[in-house]
Length: 219
Image (cartoon, rainbow, N blue to C red; front, side, top):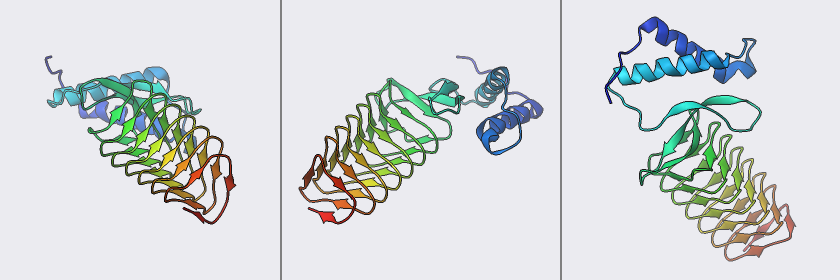
């Protein structure tokens, strides 16, 4: 594919200003840029990267993640096996080693690294982090400052949010929710309608299915 001529500095500056307005309009008095302005800015940015010898490996567009913020700059993630994965907001960080299924998404300021798999209709957003070889799938959601790491699994309709952590070989599934500063680790399993919150810890080989746990350590 031939490279296009890079835009001049003035056009590039206007495009960058439009993107800044789009990203911070909720926290300022400036008006949100129109769809035409966004598309024009994206076109200028494409020309800039192509004109400097950088051909994008995936499309750059806008996508509505359904969080009330409307369409934002995003792209489809290119998976390690070459397949086109789900949508990733330009504000999020996803390593090239990560696999994201076509219907999963990562947005906000979320960070996903290592050999993580995000599949199904899973969503990772806010400031959530998924690391190492963890897997998040089904309709699971990670948000806030949640961290999922190790070989942990979060799936079904499970939610991990706030500053909660799931690590090791732990599994969170069903409609379970982990939140507050709670931690699930080891080979623990939290499932069905369990709620683990506040500073509670579930580790070892513990299995919790229906309980509402607010404190203490369960192993």
